[in-house]
Amino acid sequence: MEIVFSRPIYLWFLLSIIFLIGLHMFTIKKVKRKALKFANFDAIARVTGRPLLTQSAFLVFFRALILLCITLALAQTTLYYLGESTEFSYVMAIDSSSSMTADDFEPSRLEASKKEAMDFINGLDAKARMGVISFSGSTFIEKEVTDNLGEVKDTISKIQISEVGGTDMGEAIITSVNSLIEEKKSKVIILLTDGQSNVGIDVKEAIKYAVENEVIIYAIGVASEEGGKIYGLDIISTINDNELTTIAENTGGKYYRAADRDGLNKAYDEISKANRERIGLELDPIFISIALIVLFVEWVLMNTKYKTIP
Image (cartoon, rainbow, N blue to C red; front, side, top):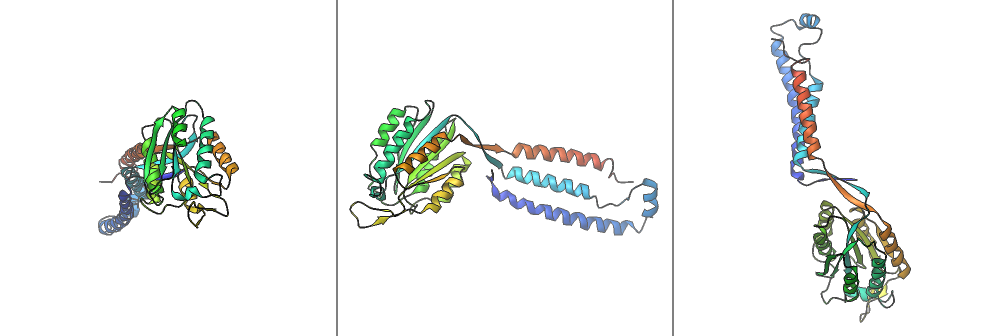
C-alpha cells in the first residue's frame, strides 16, 4: 500500500494549519483581555452554564481538519494497493546489450532467456495480451501489445544483440509503460536483464511513472553467482541485484535472481501464477466530502453551542 501525491507542491499549504492554531490562540487572548474591561464573565458563565470566552478546541480542530482535507485534495492524493486480477496485459522487456552474450548460460544469457520466455508464453491464459521491447543503450519496440501470442513468440525468437552500447533501464520501463497505458486489463512488465542501468533516464523517474500508471514490474536478473565471460572480450559480467530489487518492490512486483536455466524457469512459473493487480484509488472526492461535512458541523456549532452572546 502506498500514497502518491501527483501535485506535491500543494502540501506546503499544510503549514497554514500551524498558522491557524497560532492565530486562534492569539485572537482568544486578545479578545479576552479587551472584554474583561466590560463584563463579569464569572457571573455570566453561571447564568449561561458555560464559559463565554472558550478557546473552542473543537472548532479549531474542525478548521484544521478542513484545511488538511482541502490541501490533500489539491495535491491529488492517490492510494495504491494490490488487489486480485485474472486477466493481464504484459510487456516483455528483454535486455539485448553485449553482456547478454556471457557464457554462464548455455549457449548465452540472451538465448536462454528467449527460450524460457517462449515457454512462459505457452502457459499463459488464452485471454492474455503481450508486447515485446528490447533494450540496451536505446529501446526498441519489437511488437506492440497483441493477443496473437504466436506472433509474440516469433518476435522474441528474432531478438539479437544490439550494437548500441550501455543499458538504459529507465527508458525501457517508460517505453513499456507507454505500451500498456491503453490496456484495460491488469498491466505487468517482465524486465529481463543482467545489468545495471548506466545511461539515459533515471530509474527513479521510471519507477514513479510506472506507479502512476498502475503497472507492476517483475524483474528477473539473469547471471550466475560467479558471472560469465562476455563473447569476444576478456571481461567477466556479474549482476547488481539492488537496483532490480528496488524497481520490483516499489511497483508492487518481485525480483527473481535466476542463476541458471532452472532459476529462469521457476521465475517465469511464479510470475504466471501471480494474480496481483496494482489498483489506484483517488482520494480527492473523499477529502472534499469530509471537508464539506466538517464545514457544516462547524456552522451548526457556531450557531448553537458556540454562538456569540450579544
